Image 1 (cartoon, rainbow, N blue to C red):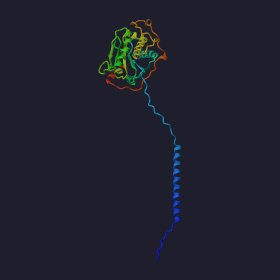
Image 2: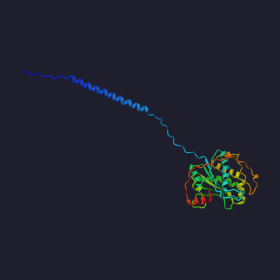
Image 3: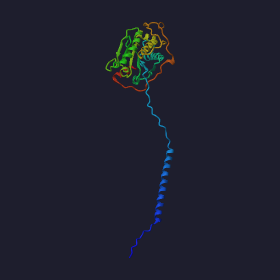
Length: 295
């Protein structure tokens, strides 16, 4: 019997069905991809972009050309004459000094009359050009002295510059420079010893002696001019010629015999300000001693 090869019947209908399914799957896949891409674009359209701004670090104030004047706040230290006190007189001296310095283009801050000794000294943390505390002395003596920080050459230079014209003005024998930085010494001055800027504290004569107390009151303009002259010398800036003349007046002499000029009015006074932070406490005993006597 002859063998016949059997050929399988090709099922074109099945092949066609498979192709159709594949085509449908491809179409669906393309539509899904297009839909996803469209949704993504819509989301991006709804996002509000903010331009990036460069962050600038806050710049610290430049106080290297600023002078801080710290008049005494010791209201209980009464003058022998004149029905006044150390705080009132030293504030007048500070304001008159500030007016002269401002004529020389110096930026000046005068401490507030209610500022504590710690608050005032903390101003020195701001890298000042100079910090000058203005006081009058007590103890029925005579003469002017000036305290400085022996650990700072700049402090000593400032003290010398401020002391020299004031000492030349006063009619009595003066006492020179005194180290006020040793907290274990009776000469310790917190405003000098705890100060981070070049600082000095000048004691302009004695307010409890009858002759020198009157001399201080008679020579406020001259003293302010001498203080400004010393500070300008330290800063190496010119002292304005319109300031009060520095003229030595004899004890008990007539103030009208000296050559003076009225310095500034209300507009010429330095702005009272403080740097706002409490200073470090330093040596507690020394601070307490000075606080008990006032600022």
